[in-house]
Image (tube, rainbow, N blue to C red; front, side):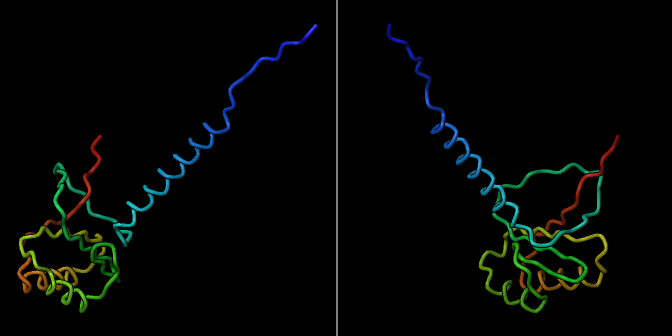
Length: 130
């Protein structure tokens, strides 16, 4: 008498594809987080936030560092980058650590005004109200 064997589908290719997709999504989310170069502690506000989908220039100011669009630069080189900016109506988002001295913020704002960039947004986080 002949013994009958049950055939089961091979799940190895399916598992391989799932792992490849998982690795792909993990890697692409890491690239998105590199937009911001400095780890800042933003002040909190009670105003609501709104999402802006326009390409914008992002300036981050920490206690001892400055970053433009995710690249750490100095205040002197910020002026060179601003001179080359063709779109003077472009939105400039400024993220400032709450421990930064006021004179450092004023220096950046003066440089922006000097180069004709006056469409400025100061970014903060929303307070948690319970």
